[in-house]
Image: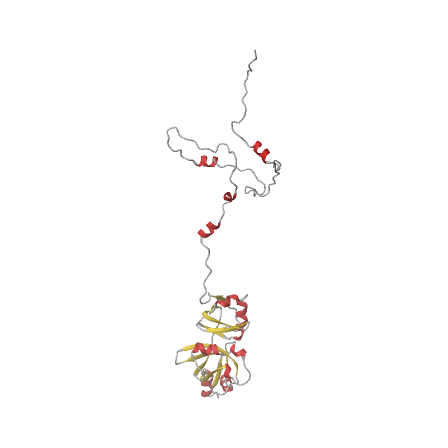
Length: 300
């Protein structure tokens, strides 16, 4: 016949209070694998009690600090701790506001599988990592669950990066064992986006190619300005201004800013360098020619 006391043991959840200690206080060699993850070490008596209770696997627990009303969730790694003691990672003790030897309540829970989580790095140095999602995925393999509001610690390239869990779905506490979870990152604490250069500064830095062209030298036809008979100032139209633009002939050593891609120019009219006397003779002089008459006078 099934006893009532055994039936009550099966339905009763695991709920025990232990004294907590950091992993560094665990006897034996240093256990960095425990410090990097989100699992605790419990005494052998806890395993004996859990096997007699109706709990879901994998084993997940809720840790509570009744004095400060702080709660987090974790998994279990081993059952080798001294009786009435549990060893938990230091970052977890900071979240629970616990000191060495304080009392912590350990209660078995069942959590939903995670589908989404959002993290915020606590330092902008996290942006220096080439592939942050891959690094985070690799580090979360040592975790069993996540709790919204916790600040977890991950280690990469001999550096410790703290990550705040901003959001988890479908609940405030989720299991991340064998799950397909989407991960997003918020801007790190204290991060400021680089300022974009102002448009005015960019416009000042632009150079007009017309300013680089040499000033025309020598006589330029039709460059003068006209006058009105009534003495009033002449109004300048857009057409007049366009007519006043003078095309400067190509000079050797000065780039042609009107060049279009896909065209070839053969400059065959470039004269060689001549002496100063020849250049003075070739200078155009207006109204310097000699006149002629149609009928010549006969000498008597």
